[in-house]
Length: 204
Image 1 (cartoon, rainbow, N blue to C red):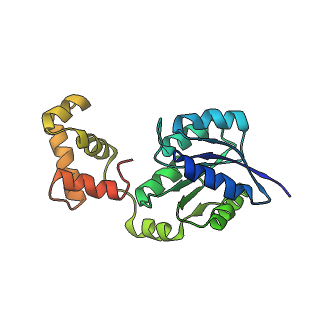
Image 2: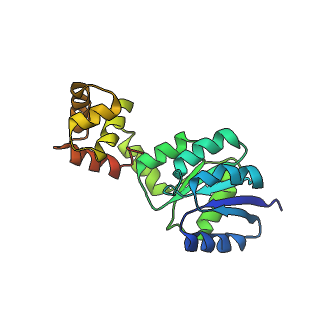
């Protein structure tokens, strides 16, 4: 029996410990290391050389999506499964674009997670079924990269002028892109457009 070497990246210590214990009970899975920060993932994978890394999305340092991007370049032999509480289609699209081979929700039974680890290690792609259906029905984000950038940046700024200064754009350009984003998302205000885009995971 081939043993699958797994690294866990999860900032909630209790959840990480429970996951390590449960996965360690599987006869063909060995948890070789764990970290609590996204910016520790690459270094840990370089040290432990796991077959697969389980990454949370929200972690200190860098998030799991950025960790997956860096890991695919630094240690391409390590496959990635994102395990998160956030069942958003935007996160799913971003995870697959970052090189992840799996995307599961944290409320999945450990038997399902173990099965996903085996399938991904064997070269398959595993996605939470309900989220996959939702992603197909919703499609990808209608926003252009610039509209996404400006809408995401607008979360921390009260005025168009402040936003324009930070992005080194003219106020008119910022206003036009925000207006287009609001219209595409069917929102009435900038705040509502941000809320819609965040809910779908399009501002990652």
